Image (tube, rainbow, N blue to C red; front, side, top):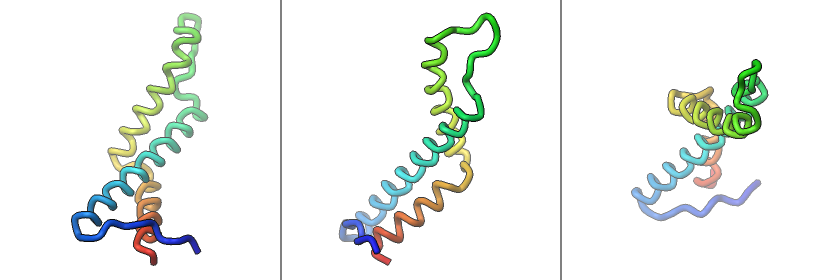
Length: 93
């Protein structure tokens, strides 16, 4: 069993910690979705009149932005599962 994460004392500190845990979970879900979008081919150059190497490098920014918007719109539920797991560990239960 893993040791509990250090937790601030008090109700407001607990709310701040939960906010940080939720943000971390959402960032991880966004990274996961960006990677899935990459493997699905989103942002790949197609056709004769594409932007070349520069376009390929900036495609990752597009995927990350779209993944972030997907998470803000509710995502796939991964962030909530991660948040609950992190919260349980932080609470020491």
